[in-house]
Amino acid sequence: MAELEYWLWLTTRKGLGPAGALAVIDHFITPERAYYGEKEDYDALPLPPFARQSLLDKSMDEPNKILGDCDRLGVRVMTFQDADYPQRLRQIGVPPVVLYIRGKAFRFDEEPAIAVVGMRKCAQVSQTRAERFGMELAANGALVVSGIAEGIDCCAVRGALKGGGPVVSLLAGGVDVPFPWENRYLFEDVAAAGALISEYPPGTPHKGSHFNPRNRILSGLCLGVLAVECQPSGGTMLTVNHALEQGREVYAIPIGLDEECARGTNWLIKERRAKLAEKAEDILEDFVELFPSRLAALAPLPRAVAEARLSAPAEDKPAPEVRKKAEPSPSAREIVPREQQKTRFTDDELAILAAAKTALTADEIVERTQIPAKRVLSALTMLQIQGAVEERPGRRFYAAVELEN
Image (cartoon, rainbow, N blue to C red; front, side):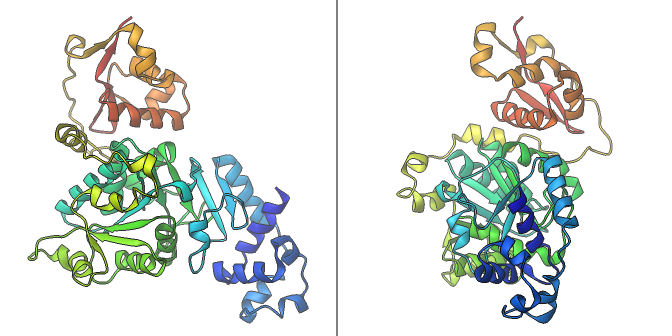
């Protein structure tokens, strides 16, 4: 833990940034040696004067606060010198010095990870496509990586969860700071089923100046980047440029010529900066040889299954007015025989199904079952994918099956 304190000390020095911190590591080898350096040692560093001056501040107050926050929130800190730091990230121009990870640990170098990106203010057709591609990529074995803002990002994330796969969201603020607030439930779903990752410590607000640095990590963790909708300039195109500089594959969805939302993606295809993608297999077939066990059986989801999953409600905030929906009588629901329950559902899922005989919020389920919130959210996601739980307006959940006593 003491060594980790020195990493956090280094990365919280004012005016240093990732490039400056890497320069310090290159010179001193370890952050601990840098911490005990003197002014004359810092004068030899290729840094501006204000950055060298910041290294003279030896206070550990901020690093200790960050460590306390991470312990409280269950956040892991990964450093540039850790053995499991992704090689993909080491190879980019300015890799992050530390990463804060909330959720599952992924071996990214062993994952067919695909980033799905696009505009926040996007066309409805693009939202539908983002969700479909997210679902198909996840269902076929890919790890979907995106942001979690409104628009394309959150649609791709919802689709990946409906596809039954984990999902990773890269953030421009702390992993404990939902952004936007309206997506806070989706934020928790990702933390439960996948991971939230940031190079900014807990409590950091999401700032506009953080998004482009975030984007280099998003593309750097992945084998390829799919642009669903974008303009010829803007955040999505910056991510595409990062991907091209990093040697990643870039894909784009073609859009009708008369649509305003077509300008960026169609330009990428026209200029041969991106490959045309009409379905998830167009992307994943490029990586089958690298991941034969994960991707060899590429096949689209059956149409009926895909339509059912895509039509499932995905409200991220309570509706202003919730009209009570008539609940089907128990006799109208599938009855799961006692002998099949343990093989079909986990213990957490069984407890939730037993509790949700009437529509309940996640908080109410936590209260009734006494299962930790993180596990409840994860179980609800899996139950929705199986069609065993329905999500009602107001983010309330109702058991669509009945357990035989």
